[in-house]
Image (cartoon, rainbow, N blue to C red; front, side):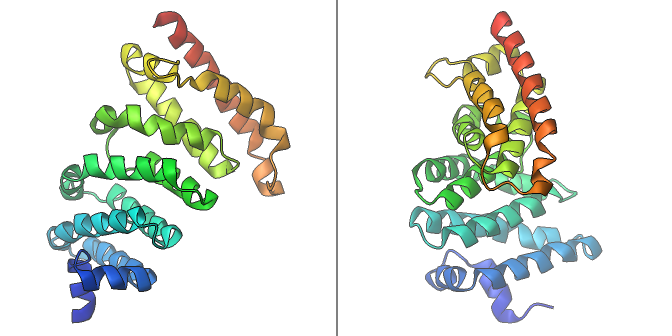
Length: 239
């Protein structure tokens, strides 16, 4: 069971004391939340108890990211929270997330576009692409999320590139041509994904810092890239 102090920490991260502890001991808070989410398996009623704390904690993390405070640890913590929500079996956490979704998207996209530290920028782009909501729910925000998707395709992080390609493939497969075509093919503000995919395809063999284990995935990445280029070519002809 959690100590009273730990329960209070999980309940009130937006307080001054809670923010201070979040900065100083984020690993401990991660352990607390992992324990809380794991408890739902045996005690489903705990989900109702945890739900209000989740959004407050996410807001606290976003607040600290705006202040550029310990971004790498906070972004890992945020991704852990996203993973917990994604694997939740009920819709309570999704309903809770809906309330803060506009602010969440704006904050993460803004941070991903402004942070200078490469690793923090990559983690922020990953968080933008992993927001644990259904694609239909994210539709009003895709015109913003495509910017971190573009940055992910331009990165040297193989895992992030794979995530961006899979996200793009999902968009192209599930969204209407009239909606997704203009967003990805250079209208209205000049973002054209096709040249990025061509450049990525050319650069796969020359990527630095790729281990032999990672290198074996390059043919699959190239195949997905080519398949996307074919699909986007079809969009261009139809839009």
